[in-house]
Image (tube, each protein chain N blue to C red):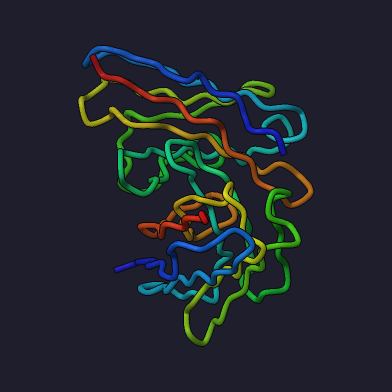
Amino acid sequence: QVQLVESGGGLVKPGGSLRLSCAASGFTFSDYYMSWIRQAPGKGLEWVSYISSSSSYTNYADSVKGRFTISRDNAKNSLYLQMNSLRAEDTAVYYCARGLPPFDIWGQGTMVTVSS
Amino acid sequence: QSALTQPASVSGSPGQSITISCTGTSSDVGSYNLVSWYQQHPGKAPKLMIYEGSKRPSGVSNRFSGSKSGNTASLTISGLQAEDEADYYCCSYAGSSSVVFGGGTKLTVL
């Protein structure tokens, strides 16, 4: 079935780095824009970044611009988010989602905690 | 990239109808017919309920409907059921290739 599975979350110190992955299955991954969306504990959804189907276009929320990099490997049906210079305010569940919006398929999320 | 404005909470009794508003600006909701709505139950991933303002994905109940007037989009749920109790988020394309979500609305079914 159509599925997205995130991995790579964990505990990291402020200023540290982390790379999230999202494995896609059940659809032609290379046909779709993909996005990362996050949700801080007890807070609402915040769009983070998207990437076009061929990686030609990317964009980022102002809050992560210059620190996060989105990428994809269509041969591996995988989406990535490289997160550098992490801050406490980056603590959140990170979801990968299919689309630009609308986001019609979501993963289960992976928790990222930035704390000393 | 200011968040869209939603009421923090709404409530209704089973069988009733409720409407959740989502107010943006002429740069986002008002300029594009690209508002989508998401339902999120506690501890779960969001689920797409409405896209392009008023379209329902396959499998979503026709009790859910969307509309837009000017800079405000709305989600209406008719025939409220206990299972509708959840958080609801609107989302819009916001120009300059950016995306913005609403702050979320907690729906309580009394």
